[in-house]
Amino acid sequence: DQQVKQNSPSLSVQEGRISILNCDYTNSMFDYFLWYKKYPAEGPTFLISISSIKDKNEDGRFTVFLNKSAKHLSLHIVPSQPGDSAVYFCAASPQGGKLIFGQGTELSVKP
Amino acid sequence: GAVVSQHPSRVICKSGTSVKIECRSLDFQATTMFWYRQFPKKSLMLMATSNEGSKATYEQGVEKDKFLINHASLTLSTLTVTSAHPEDSSFYICSATLDSQVGQPQHFGDGTRLSIL
Image (cartoon, rainbow over all chains, first blue to last red; front, side, top):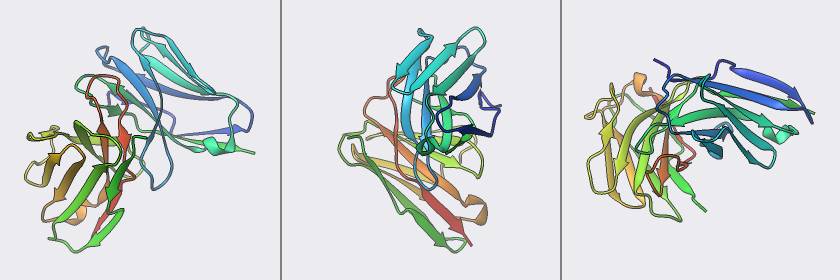
């Protein structure tokens, strides 16, 4: 039972264009959503989060949008850079600090 | 800040061996540490939540006697895979958080690649 889903295993984008990574969830009780970035052989690093009471949070080139009615969130990266190439995980936080992760989307930004 | 160190980064050992993995928060005191397991091309699956000084809380389907977790101090948690078998081969990652409240980001170690022959 996958409560957090990233249906696109991979995404390829040209440098300078926008990258849009999508995530769907099933549990309406999730309070916080987070995005992590992961390079091979390294642990995930925190990127950006959003509370369920908001619909948008922006931090530099990264913006996360939350659509609660659709149980959908997305991460926008603009402009995309080659160094952004990594696996991106969305995660939901129900309670107690636990995180439930999606399967990840591998982003490739081509020069 | 918020650096988490995990050791060792890679272990290769024979079936039946017990393997200990350490997770340390280097520049902060972690009230809560988490242990995850990741299979190739799959999500990070939470195995257990560890609070300093108390017993770990295991997720459904995770064997407590197989995966022993000790969180003896605010900066160190250990995961011991007891009598490891090839099916235990995986990528194990720990994370730590200063505050276990909802929405607080977890800071991850770089993971341990465990290979059981």
